[in-house]
Image (cartoon, rainbow, N blue to C red; front, side, top):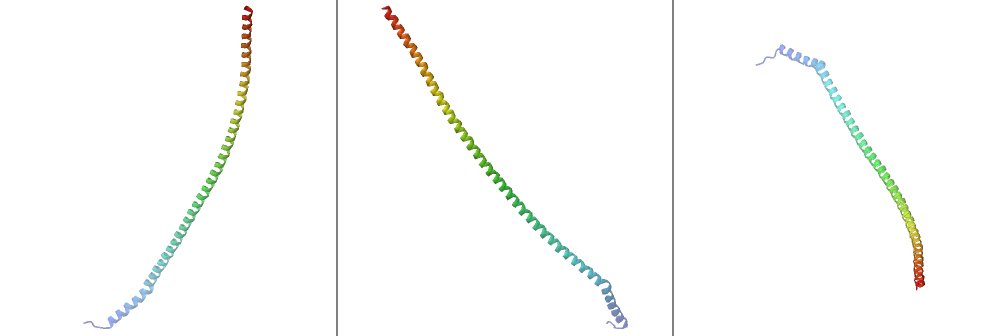
Amino acid sequence: MVELNATVLVQIVSFFILLFILKRILFEPLINVIEERRTYISDSEAKIKDKIAKLEESEKNYENQLIEAKKMAQEIINEHISIAEEEKLKILNEVLAETHKDFRRFELELEDYKIKLRNELKEDIEIIAQSVTDKVLTTNLSTKKLI
């Protein structure tokens, strides 16, 4: 059996004194360092989360701006296409009007040319008819003179 004597009591008291000293010198500073480390890590994690949130927000803003810029560019393109279509129609109408005008002028010139040719042909026919008549009459007179 275990005897309780003064040595055991001194050892127990020495052990508790050692625990008290170790607690003050070693364990409390170590626990403080561990707590500071935990605080630092949790603060760092919070900062990282904030920066990630800001980055995601910036990315969304960038995407929204990009979408808006694409919309504006498409609107400008559509506007220019519309203007070009209107200009094309205007030019086509001008060309069509000019073509009709030229065609009408050509028809009038052709009609004038037909009239001119008809008149020239009429004159030529009259000359030929006069010539034929003269020849027939001359031939008839010559044959009557002979008879």
